[in-house]
Figure 1 (cartoon, rainbow, N blue to C red):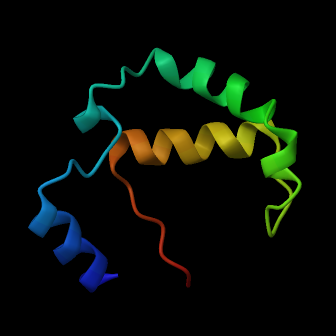
Figure 2 (figure 1 turned 45 degrees about the vertical axis):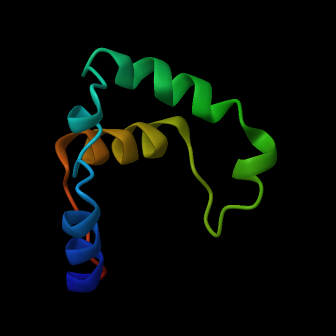
Length: 69
């Protein structure tokens, strides 16, 4: 994880969706659109429901990193 953080810093990209200019209001729409991508979701290693997708976008918006425990 530390190496990935260094890479992000080296290439100077934002750490969050917010840093890319995505608004909090857009998260609902992004989740709604993502759940329609059944071809991609079918290849996911675990099932994703709309609430799961929204949580991923919420964490990405906040720049939160969830490490495996």
